[in-house]
Amino acid sequence: MGRWKTVVAWVIVAPFALWAAVRLSGWDATFRWVQLVSFTPYVAAASVVVPVIALVLRRRAPAVAGAAVVAVFAALLAPRVVPDGEPRAEGPELRVLAANLLFGRTPAADVLRLVRTLDVDVLALSELPSPAKDTLEKAGIGEYLPYSQDGTNETTLYSAYPLKVPGPSPAGAVRAQVEVPGAGGIVEVVAVHTCAPLYPGLDQCWRDSQAALPAATPDGAVRVLAGDFNATLDHATLRAVLATGYRDAAEVRGAALRSTWPADGRPLPGVAIDHVFADRRVAVLGYSVHTLPDSDHRGVFALLRLP
Image (tube, rainbow, N blue to C red; front, side, top):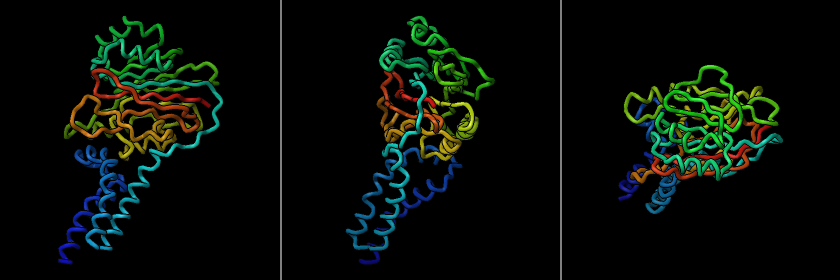
């Protein structure tokens, strides 16, 4: 009986320990793991019962191992729920909203309502095909955000301030310089929409499109990335982008476990794949997630103070 209890305890511990080890390694070389690792917060929550079961079975070594796994997950996820301190930023505010409209299905009136309610300065839209863009402009988006720049893959950047295009944008993105009054220089904003790893073979496009995102330039111009990254903070590719000198607005505000997809009722656990990344010199004063009618994403809003 004792041997049976030991085997059961270790069988329960093993998959959680393996998940934690692979997540720590940063390995994401296979399509299926790219998808699965997004659900790490749920695995972490479930791991709490592992040492409890081991203790009930009176197996000390598996209980200790299970507690160690829980500690690893806690260390990985704690930064997402504990707000960060803020850099000293004394420049103007910049209000950024990013939204995936599911091929333009979100009604223009709802987009405009969010823009007005949040007093948006910069709007990064993805999955906005030409007919939906025409409808949005007829509805009056130009009254609030008169400047715009189109990118590839149906991505558009709207702004309350003049835009300049510094050069080619990465695939699926729009890269533009925003002339924010009082900022003391140019702020570059990139509307992001990377490949989604929906099917085998698309994971390489997913990696390439994230690798193509411009790095932060903490010693140069301020840069902000906003949009549908199709990746969570558990993906090594996304953490590599952050490591260049960005901070995730949701993580800074302790709200990085708030899901943004799916938001259309499908039976999947929610994950956070829509983000606003800001140069580490930028203060994040607020962050919120907003429902987008008829879209499978929620919009993400960040209130920033520029250096």
